[in-house]
Length: 403
Image (tube, rainbow, N blue to C red):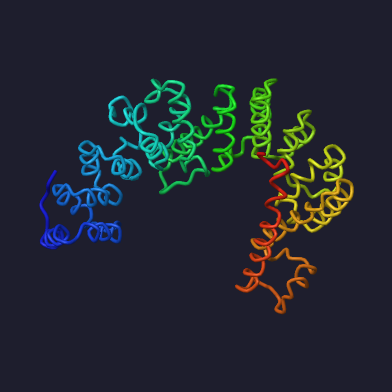
């Protein structure tokens, strides 16, 4: 593995071997994108210093060195750093097969931290990621408990959280890689069709899909969502609450268009309708009236957190009137504060929709054209923090999105 090095590389390697290891680590971190690190990794690996090995594991792009270090170390932290390194040799195009016994062993027997580092590495993508969710290929020998762990951790993989983006024009091959990317997201969603119907699976799937915002882009086939949503129903009180939350979340994140809006909003399952209320958008105030007539306070609870309803002034004003009406009925006036929190959050990101009353209330003296000034941002943030702190205890007593 050792190659022929120039004088600059040899001198720097000698210096790094003589200074305190923490300083050598800092050098690697500060120069991680420079070519010299590639060769320094080969030279300094022979020193077998733990801190320098950690620096190599985290910052080197030398695949041969990374693989050598992985095979020789038993240190969990260093192994995690190696498995997190996007340059680690996962096979051609990140495809892991039966030849990669070391990586299969991590998947089947590694610590939770090692598995997390492996399956969330951005270099693990496409079919390799999909195989975990299908429990096939390199994941085919996982038992139920291990499959649960691997699926839960694999849902943290950043490739599942966005649409396909090509790093370079690849012609026909680019279309194939986009297919593999989308298929991994599809297989992640298919977990809702094949995962065991337990509260633990429901809670973990809800949390991971929610936290990572894993969306089936452009998929508006209601037959798929119908199969998923009717599957997660239980007469067992122990499972019922977590299943309700899961159905609500799926309905909220499913792509909505003209062909699906009525399907979700008129669904006989109230939990599904509530999920829809959290994310739908409309330009028709009659929709708000109709949903409020159907689900009352439950509609309000969801709608006042739906930022889509705060962009259009007509829709926002109608929602505000419904909130006020509902507060008088329920006696729960904090919904008005939650409305204000959402409004201020939206306007802080989209200052062009600020209304006259908010401008007067915050005493802005200068007209806004491009965005908020630093002082205006600080004022909005201060008010938002105060409202959220005041409502925290009260909101904890009500059932929110996931309890």
